[in-house]
Length: 323
Image (cartoon, rainbow, N blue to C red):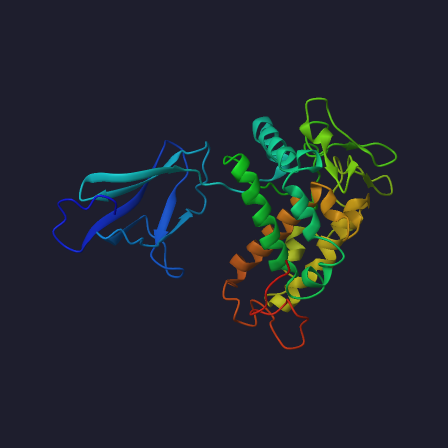
């Protein structure tokens, strides 16, 4: 509340709802961190200006088609007292991005890197041999990488709010990802080539220009799925207990990494390659699908997350994840 003139009580009821453009995204609301979402929410706003928290989410199955094609409106009675334009972003299959979506993504990623001088250096420095015990080989593998790529995605959205991190389905062919205009084409030595209009041609990490990534054993990722990679259906049937499902760290996750030579094949250097983040976006998607399939959303339940005294530091629920 910023202008309480005329208010006759200590608070005013404000109804919050979404208004969508034709074919646009949709939002839903709830008062607290748990409970069902609804299409609108009435909150009691104090006239002294105290903030009132509530929660907004994109409606499942209703992503935006354009930036800011959803408006969140606040009304006191029938009077519109405030609004904000938003976008319901969704992580898409990188192989099916439109040319415009692809170009906005690579542009934002290149700007985040800024030829080695940008904020991406922080993300490069997070995924190293030093951090590996916190991020791999134990229950924290999936949540550590979820937080990691979410933080990176937010940095990209600060550059271009219309984008979301896309995923590479490593169990399928990807003819539109490994191109000169997207994530590049590897020469026989593994040096990744880009078109002269692709800003990723200026990618730089650890003081070294370029990306080294080479498919092993004559594998062509544009026409073949990753050799030996467990497919999505098989991954989702690893088990309905987290302890069983997280074995996907080995396959498909680890196998998808090691179908390549170059930096992406090793933990200390994998984050040097932008492909790493599309790979882990798919890992996170598989975990999200497993959570939804099995209703595994309460981390305090053993079936959803195996937190126990035998885990290394950093892998139990009360622990802080480095860094």
